[in-house]
Length: 111
Length: 119
Picture 1 (cartoon, chains in turn red, orange):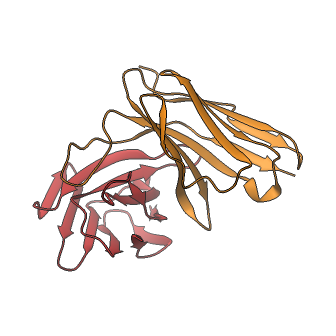
Picture 2 (tube, rainbow over the protein chains, first blue to last red):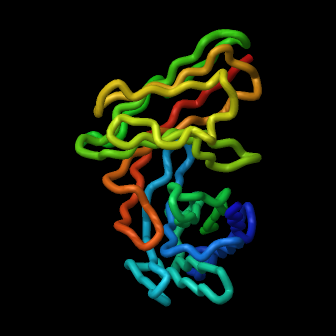
């Protein structure tokens, strides 16, 4: 079955630095991958989608890369702010079934 | 649009009791998903519907769990009897299209969740 691993449960960084979160997957070649943000007490909110034929996608301070050879996606937040503190989930298409979500990485940006 | 609406937001019940969680999807969305989230297992898909018809319920943990979607604007997830290990946050999500490989993609819109505690 599809397996998704996000590099760590928690990541602490200093304000202004670039946060890099990793999503690795096995056993499948997804057509696309999505990233969601989840704040405490709330449901996940969609941030970005990247397709297998796209190497990189940007949205404001966010950047996502997708390396189908390494079976990995990297999610970057540049010039991080305390307001970026949240849990970030990656999710990928597993074929004829809905999205499969990783467990998430809890990011804390320290002022 | 108000987004996906779930009720109740919090539910505390005793083991053996019946629990019913409710969801109103975004108007016009033809897919509805029920998830369970725990620290240990993350976000797990329980069941999903397309045009009110259950498509895949393989994620439903046991016969104690059941879900219905009587119309396009309402769905329920029922646990009977409830057990302490059912304690989790349950999310409902909806979307226009089912994300499938190579096909039309869309994103899922999640409700605020129901935090269930079974004592």
